[in-house]
Length: 262
Image (cartoon, rainbow, N blue to C red; front, side, top):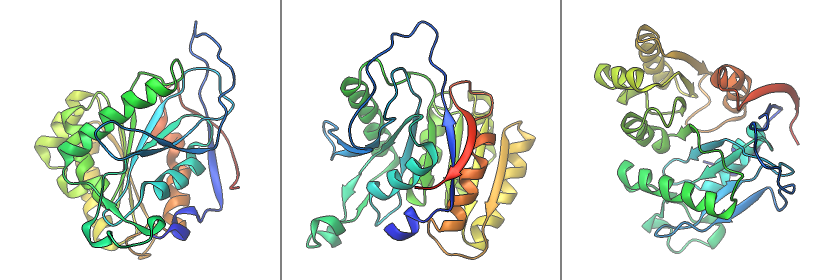
């Protein structure tokens, strides 16, 4: 995943989360938009902060692909979420074949979906400790690219109530068999958004989307044409445009407007 492809964007959806009833107002959250987060037992995550907010904010977990970096996922998802919620980007482990790369060019991957699930859980706990009274304890949006999407399917299957809204980019659809879809439907998954930059991905996603819809799970497939296995500009723009649909019904997230990307 190239950084330039991640940050390329023409517009972004701005999401607003209303203050929770009875919540204590805190000082405005300050700091840099993207920050490192110590995750005990794992390498540091990256988190996008909802700067200027004073109350509870929802969380989106963004997982990267193989030979990738969490910084890139947090950059592009910040363009979507902005200062409405937290974006937690787990790092995974350094690939052995990049041990001699300069620090800023090292690449990471996730060893297994079980290990990634643990890293997310510990990361969320660390996020709540670091920002007490600001992290909403409710359901999370799961977003995964490539390896993060593939490993996300079993993670969501094990805890569907925790992840009722899912974004799978360039991967994951192949793991959604009939039994898995039934488990997701019973567990409370509401919406699944697929985004593809390759025809094979799009074909599989369209087939699976029909099965999801039959199970009363909303599903949409975005296909930007054959732009390759990446978070290309067109794919990113299409995902942003579908955020209102993805979070519809969750009162913590509501779309206000579209503004030019910074």
